Image (cartoon, rainbow, N blue to C red; front, top):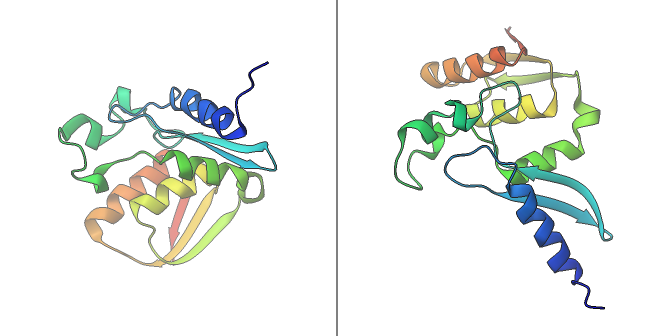
Length: 147
């Protein structure tokens, strides 16, 4: 019998997982393994509660033509981020995040994926970028409060 090595086996699962991606630019899958057992899977895509890339949910996928440009416009979480965030999701579900600065768009995406329900912050980060992050959090039903 010709069995795949563990590396071959898990990379095959990562490739299969990438087919769940909703990103128009690139499909990536990730598997987190410990002791030859899968802890978590992840693929790149928009945060839950938002439109998928192929539905117009990511300005970068809709507007930017060249690979590697304007990465800050991307609404997608990376496959690795999704896999990592899922592992701790149960512990973070329905919690409140307290932070001294308004979360950037990148952090807002991670906050959404972790299942955090409320964000309390002190200072604004960047007026233009804050609007994007605030809109993203609010769209996903997360309460945001500045104190």
